[in-house]
Length: 107
Image (cartoon, rainbow, N blue to C red; front, side, top):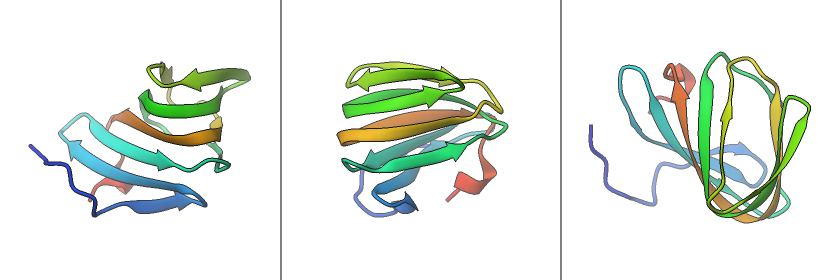
């Protein structure tokens, strides 16, 4: 699968947060998140492992009981079924890989 960058196709996740599935295969799914300053990603968990990279911005990311100050260039991995949430400090962009594929994120 190949995809070119385009501005269409973003879906609201929470107030100030949108996501777009970029590409997916049999075992992985790549998603871009656009996160606005002050947005809150609610506490949640899912059965997929989640690996992320902050392209730009700053946020506080809580994984389980650990709070991380995340800056552009930092990365993380969230094991399956572990609660996590985030507070967005400045406008940010993150890319994340989910494995196995999140069926609810398929275009």
